[in-house]
Image (cartoon, rainbow, N blue to C red; front, side, top):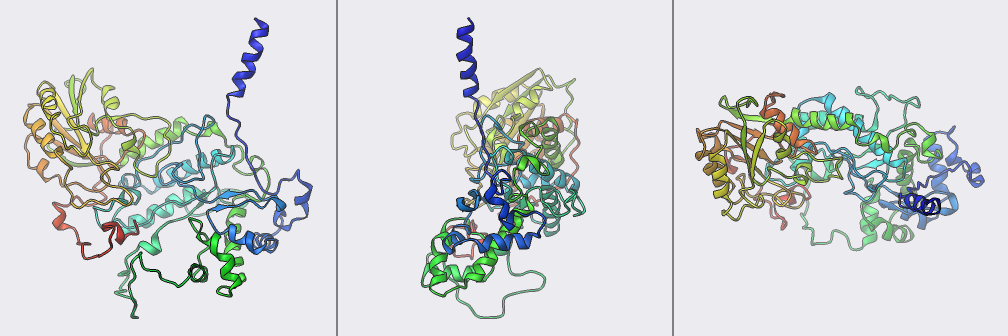
Length: 540
């Protein structure tokens, strides 16, 4: 037996993934001791200038893209600048990876729902939790330190597919959300005062994306730029050569390219005298100062501030409880005719119906990672009543087949109460895909109406979506007692919905994005002639 146990013991440990971490300025490497950029007693500016001064032009060009190459002769590892954390650490960007060491991270609701809480302290705490998990993953080599979040666009047209990423249509709320979420991510304190001893070190770096290029120019009394210009479509080249484009971008202040363009053409742009090498240097200095504030050039990250964080700090009970709290605080009660809350004492049998009634990934929206766990609406309601009869009604939110409606009607007729969970998902609204109207897709409206008309019990309609839905049909049906908008509620969405329905949480917030009566109430964007649809107005 002993001879058998030994190889089994070793084979067990060989199956555990060994996560490694490369870092700059390794104190065990004698070659780094003479590099001023590794000297933590100097200013960030002096250190960054020293590093840039040691680079060749070819090396400089390779550092201007998100996938920056390593510089082995200086002990500087490759670095991926692109990581995402809109509502949790996400592997949408190439800088984050999940494996058996860290299989998932806390997934908060879509930003549009969390913003509906109007709770700035919640937004700060969400950012702090996300950055804690990000640092924990960085310390074991599974994440970067630079996160392209939050999205601070204003949700101007409710049909825009990326509205789910934003804090909504109110510029004041958007700004307050951005300030608090960024302060939480970077952990500089709720009032902007640095909470760590170094006074200017960052926990992670936040990049507020899209604002300049996506915003509309009619702002603060500015009606237009008062010069004449030609408008070019994406298919028409703006410059004669790629090097000209690189030169213009660098001179305008671009420091980082999400892609490979600067890496390919910067060297030739400098050699052909289209842009000075000093401008390239300045771009890199700015980038390296950010990494230095993050401790990237301070040696082993486990010996630095936040270095004690590890896998046990991801998906903690407290973090998951905050995800549930964020979902509850964002849920909007659109209408209630005395049907809510339901009582578990008098409600013994619920018919749960709809294409979003037992979903998982739909709840975590876009730019999501791998959640710690899921609680679906079905699982949430099963905690309150002994019998939940589930009928999908439609196979998916497109709801192009009405054959499942009959079974849903039958289940509703036999139930004490009916919960219908309808709405949208990423097949209807997402980056690059906008809606053309505000109605429920396919036969969903018919599903709701036939189910409601078949029962004498309470009927609660739950809308799972980012953009608003025209719910006038439900408000005009006297059989429908309540309407909830739950956004995309994150990993704990099912618990949040159930707790609201049964009165363990009272939703009191107004809707963040106005639920208009129809698309005729939406300011038209159809005059825009971009060939990719409404997304053209926002850059995707």
